[in-house]
Length: 218
Figure 1: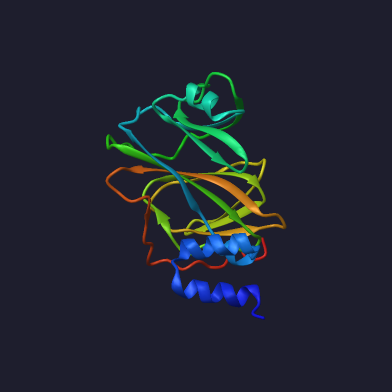
Figure 2: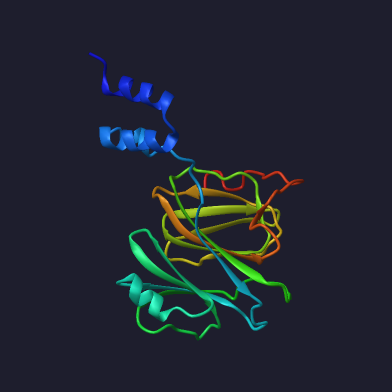
């Protein structure tokens, strides 16, 4: 009698990947179904138009329901569901607060250069195990990284910086190469904002710089 995995492999030769994952889930083969590329995954892409020239901050608030979060959202906000919570993510001045909800963090001022370009906020999530390391990359705009758990070390040409959940968030100006490493003993869970010119992709190739391995052993 053929094993369930043997039958699953034969099915996978004749159907597409989505159908194969569905069969894997129904057969209880969780390891196969959960196989996916680790690292940052998209949450939302929001075109914001021209932003105020005053210092800009990233506000993170949570709500009990999506309807409540949507009701509190303004033109520079977006609602996402990630890590078992409903978040309202907003770009505004330092003292701005939405109606209701639980205020989690205010991050900034964001390291933005003077520009009158139309801007886009690209939001991402990441859940990576200790030891995970990204490729060398750079963003076309400012990055802000908020940690819910774990810790991360980022190396740039200027050196290394370490951030822990509950500590200072990472703020990195656009246009510089970097490499991130998940450190410590916990899974690193984070929400990431890249605020960039709408005419540019959020992530662009980085070349001409090699990390020195400063985050090894952090």
